[in-house]
Length: 114
Length: 115
Image 1 (cartoon, each protein chain N blue to C red):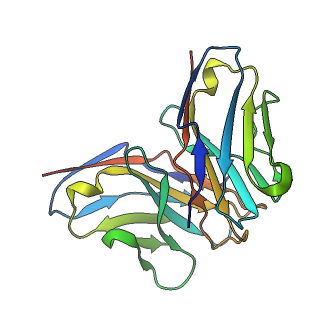
Image 2 (tube, each protein chain N blue to C red):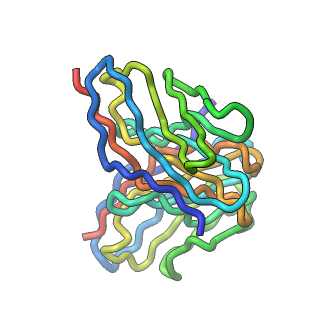
């Protein structure tokens, strides 16, 4: 079965430090991977995606993600965290068994402390 | 351009009552999706409309849930009768074309609490 795992419920980081939010996936065939963010009282916002090509993908707000096929991971990273990055982050993969639904992880809450 | 709009933003109802959630997709988007996040768990797919047709409703939990999209514009998701386990955040998303490599645009969600 296709799935996404976000092993950390919460990540705490100090402002200015680098951050990593972990994600691993399980799909058959080529994965189409996404990161979304949900700020308080807002909807899910698209951050970035990996489709093919360069393993390092750059997205919105200075975020990037590294696709690692051998480790089936797609970790979200940012070199220098901001307090305003505090939010709920979801990793997702497109279900390629038919249809166009997206399979999400459980989410990781990021707290950035000033 | 207006984004995906959902209302109400919050709804508190008693067990056994009926609730109807509404989603207005981005204008021109034929594809509309409903998802649900229950109690801090993963966001789960409910169903997918292409215009007014149900393309995939494999995620609908049971027959207490009814989704419609008359005229291929806005969609409603009705829960009747509501049960406690239906509490959660219901998200709607839309996209112009259903491709594997395109992202969908999400609304802010409706938080449903069944007491």
